Image 1 (tube, helix red, strand yellow):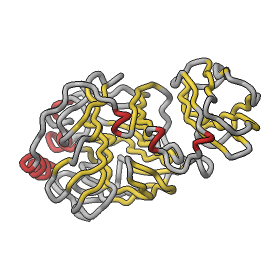
Image 2 (cartoon, rainbow, N blue to C red):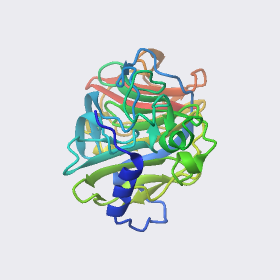
Image 3 (cartoon, helix red, strand yellow):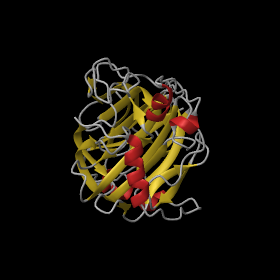
Length: 346
């Protein structure tokens, strides 16, 4: 496996990209296929996950990530993602060829590195201190692919003094069925942001439906986050690395990109429903105006597929005050089938 020097790679990108002027107004991300929200919740390290680096140190890693189900990203259906050596360690692509046009998913755009990596040797060795792994949780139909970057360091800080002091933990969750995307942020300590983030204040977080690798340019507009890291705005983005959140992202922060309902494939319109508020702290109200089928049962399950609550099928208001903070699924079973919506309990 080859490893490329970040500064050479970064210079190549910037010198070839025509940076368009960032739109200064918040956009309706629904029109871009997603709505965005920020919340807080628990952060738990993955247990029993499959390691990608298998104890080897890494810099600009190259790995194939099986999703485990068909996942619709913008208008493209994916069954795998790729970490490639141009991506700094926290960028995922829909293809591994580095040519042509395909999507980019950037949960943590910073030049991250294994904290055990030897900059002087500039080669992978055993003794990793930073694991990249994945895990598929839940029952078929509502599974979640969880990808974890654990205890990662930053290239420029490690290069500067051969010591990795700053670190970050984060996970990317992809939801089967709803096609939602979540980024969960864990314990992070960045005492030298200008060094660790290469002159920026924070990592770059963005979604792009089409990126032209031959011309190194974004096609159309993607979505990038800007402003307060606790509650950033989602802006239209027409070039890479043009806008950033304004500081290090706090522990237990969750960024959610919810797929627009009109873009969900395979859902019977007769089974559509929604509830509000979401996120919620104590009670949700169920709207069933479009639900044409006869309801048999309403259940709520956690991300492991375990049922935590069964509700009277005639209920329109559901008490969730007894649930712990986290992610759940509200499922309605009718005579015509099953419909599921994600719930964030704060």
